[in-house]
Amino acid sequence: MSSSTSTPALPDSFRLAAGRLELDPRDRRFFENPYPAYAALNEAGGIARWDRVDGWAIARHDLVSSILKDRRFGRIVAENPQGRPDFSRKPGHLRAFYGLEAHSLLELEPPTHTRLRSLLTRAFVARRIERLAPKIGALADELIDGFEGRATVDLIADFAVPLPVRVIADLIGVPMSSAGNLLDWSHRMVAMYTPGRTRESEDAANAASEDFAAFLRDVIAAKRRSPADDLVCALIAAEDEAGRLDRDEMVSLLVLLLNAGHEATVHQIGNGAKTILECGEAPASLFRDDRTSEATVEETLRFDPPLHLFERYALEPLDLPGGVTLARGDKVALLLAAANRDPAAYAEPDRFMPRRFLDKGARTVTSFGGGIHFCIGAPLARLELRIALERLFARCPGLALAGAPRYRDSWHFHGLERLEVTPAGGAI
Image (tube, rainbow, N blue to C red):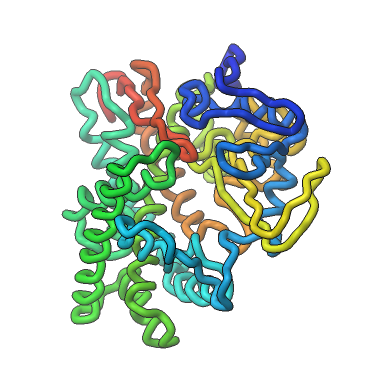
């Protein structure tokens, strides 16, 4: 199976020489299709100094995987014994945004990270995820029902966006009527992580942070008065048992779950659907049983994942292959999607071949990170992706592309802003 019959050109801004990479993340050719640039970087050894990210770009699967698990690297270089970031020098107009970030698992190191992740793991148990399966299927069917009678459908706006936000809202226990606000707040906050952010986007992110935090404080207060079977109440119970989770920490955990719980999943559903529509294989053959469905999901996560960049910092001086020496505080930009296309890890990496994951010896994808910062929502993401794609292609077996896919200018996420399809006579 192949998703392309021609080799796309390198981005216009791409230059790689003497261990230095020049590449503009906002180069349209790059954010629409970064894989030629990744391939060229891997062919040149998989590591280069990239001034645009003020660090070392790393594309090799073995290096990315090892650094993700290496405790000589961290998400921050903590100057205090609690492993907390110091945001005291951040500008005042971003006070609310960094107030949330100060307690985010993504910005913490042990021992604070260990404590908060343990409490979250206690609430985010497998049985809580598994029992969402019928609801995910019902939501997918409801959205597909909306295709009836329509000549074309935008799979992003009409399917990939509403499904994950409704699932995560239900899991956490916030009102479904809040889905629109959750999407708005999340989009404005996530814009802080994309290249080329402006003062306007920073102000928008800060305002969203204020509103999001106020909303969640009200939700937490209401749950304390009237407990229910949801993640907020499970966190309250974990807090009461251990007595080590304050309100600001809980709010930040919930913001992270709500943002990460739908933003990446939206992109993965869209990327996965596009890949399958282009691969030339009958979708029914990709989802004929649980084993092939799981392999297909894993290959979509390898072939075109939503998160492409994860930054880590050296916590002590150390050497990397290729004669690269890092000082404490030096940054490495781990290119997760490039690692997933490394020919040293995967045969024919630019071909979409789900059967590779029928082999128990297949390499683990880097799409969810690794080590202590491995994505805690990975089981939910895999479950949502499998059910969403299974229901989509079962209900719409004649689904076909109706226009050129359009990508968002949002690297280090890679995802579509529009994927127009024809349901071929409507859903069944």
